[in-house]
Each structure stands twice: as C-alpha cells, then as structure tokens.
Amino acid sequence: MAATKGGFLISQIKQIQGRIFGRLLTEAGIDEFNGAQGRILYVLWTEDDLPIVELARRTGLAKTTLTGMLDRLEQQGHITRCYNQEDRRQIRIRLTEHARSLEQRYQEVSDKMNRLFYRGFTKEEILRFDTMLDHVLKNLEAEEKRYDTKESRTAENGNPDNKNS
Image (cartoon, rainbow, N blue to C red; front, side, top):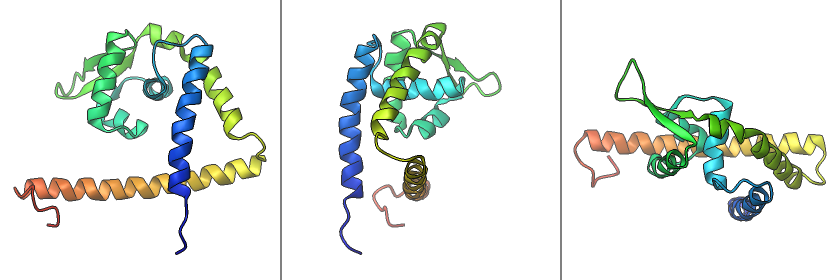
C-alpha cells in the first residue's frame, strides 16, 4: 500500500482545531472550561447521569485522563459524582444546573466550529467524509478493544511482563 498521510492530517487537524476552539470559547465568554472538558460536558448534555466507564467510551478519553478532568470539573461546580443506588461500586456523573446553563453558548461555538470545518464542502461531501471518519474510528476502537482484551487476559494469567500470551 502506498504511503498515506491521513493519520498525520488528523493529528494536525486535532491540534489546530483545539487552538481555534479555545479561542472561540473565549470569544463567547466561556472561560470556565477548556475544549477537552467541553467534550465531557457535551456528552453529558446529550445524556446525563452516566457511569465513568461509559463516559470514557463516549469521549474517547482514557479513564486516568478522564478522572483528572472530572476532578477539575467537579471543583468548578460543573458536575457531581453520585453512587449508583443498585451498585455502590459504580460512580455516575451528573451535570449541575450551572453546567446546564452553559449548553446553549457552547452549542453556538460548536456550530461555528462545524461551519469552519466544512466550509466549501457540499452536503454529499460532508456525509461521505463523516462516514469515512466513522469507519476509521470503528477500526481504531476495535483495535483498542483487542489490546484491552489481550492485556486483561495477560493480567488474569498472572504474567504482566509477557504481553504475547
């Protein structure tokens, strides 16, 4: 297969998008959280009261990264952690009223970012592009799951140094 640069381009887009999105948030008067924290809030605005594991899956953030970000969001008064009544080991994340009050302004910034992303694209090109990106994401999620399964089997076998078992 010929060398491609899709992964490199996605990485560059992510970096530049993050900087622009941060500026747009500031221009909209949203300086209470950054773009990455906004991704967590966005998922919760879509569906509130999620277990941490599900929130990690939907945001694509590692649980260790997510935990630190949740700490900051909780300190800022955007989320609360609640124990699941049926399973006290499970912690669920809920939005505060304050965080809910920021949703409309955040959505306006998000819409502006989408207009920047797709400037000059036809509707068909946008749909095709989104479909391709979904396909790439599914490929990567499947590979990550394969690694996670392999690592958990290795840990269960009591041989953490042998990743090839």
